[in-house]
Length: 115
Length: 114
Image 1 (cartoon, rainbow over the protein chains, first blue to last red):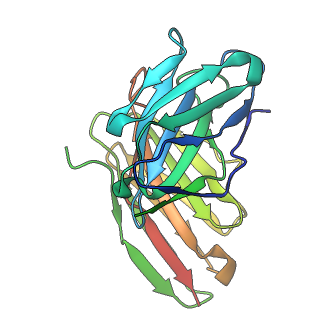
Image 2: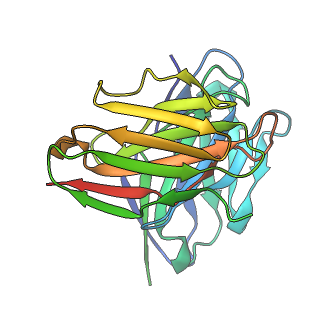
């Protein structure tokens, strides 16, 4: 069965520092992968997605993610973190592998940003 | 479009009472999902609909939970009777077949059962 693992529950970075949030997935075929961000008291907002093609995908708010099939990973990165990036980040894989599949979410990584 | 609209934003109820959560999906979206978010279990899919028809309710925790979608613009999630362990944030999301943007989530309903 498909699953998503986000090994880091909580990460703290300094403002202006680079960021990498880890995501590993379990799926037998080509996965459809997503990153969402959730600000306190809010719903989830799509940051970026990977369906096929270029393995480095660009998203909103300066985020990018790289799909690495050999490592079953889809890590989220940002070169310079802003205080407004403090939020919880969720990686997700589409169940059944298609873009139409239901999303299976990881447990999330909470990002804190130090001034 | 106003996005996915959920009501109420907060609900506090006593154990044993009936609770109804409401969701209005984005116009034109043909899929609607109900998720529950807790600290312990994260985001869990409860049920989803396609063209108002329930497709998979295997995530509904027990018979106390029920969901309906009487038309394309409205869905409810009902808990009867409610229990303290039902306390969570309940999200509704919608998407369109073939849409490249994935899901659009509502702001959620924070349910507290005391």
